[in-house]
Length: 197
Image (cartoon, rainbow, N blue to C red; front, side, top):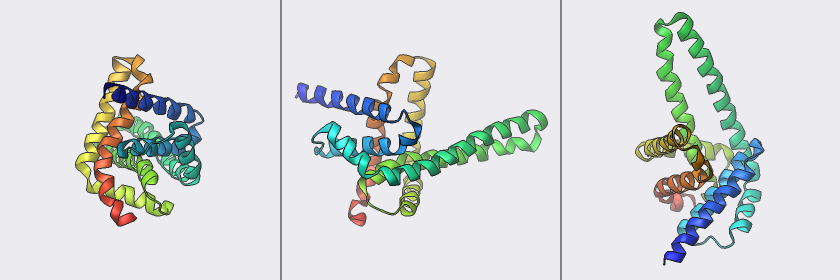
């Protein structure tokens, strides 16, 4: 039992490293994340099989759709990043009512990151058009806002601890994030299996 537990920890770590390596060309982030989520979901169901082979099978199968989705979300993140600089400059220069843009900006950021945490596990679990993938994962994220906000907070705390206090844990962050996110999101996504099968 102890060996089985340690083995599962090792394979989660291994999949996290595989994910990080496959994300090095940033364009592959979406497909690599879908493959990583797909393998973690298989582990949840006890159906993982061969880890490397399974990872690359999912990556190859979901490459096109995951890359499209990542392109759209990456573009939104870039726009929000540029907006943050613009809003910051307006607030510093003029202050006043421009400060009202800050909560709007954070609200939009939360919506985009809510979509980001659901969309790749959704692709790994369900077959759907890209439009429906984006729409459904957004609707699920907003419908189950308690789990969505909890997952975002846990992710944020982990990143904050890593950057502020323990930069060395960067090597295990993918494993921890994957485990936390899939554990949380699987509770939600499994409810939709019957409706989408």
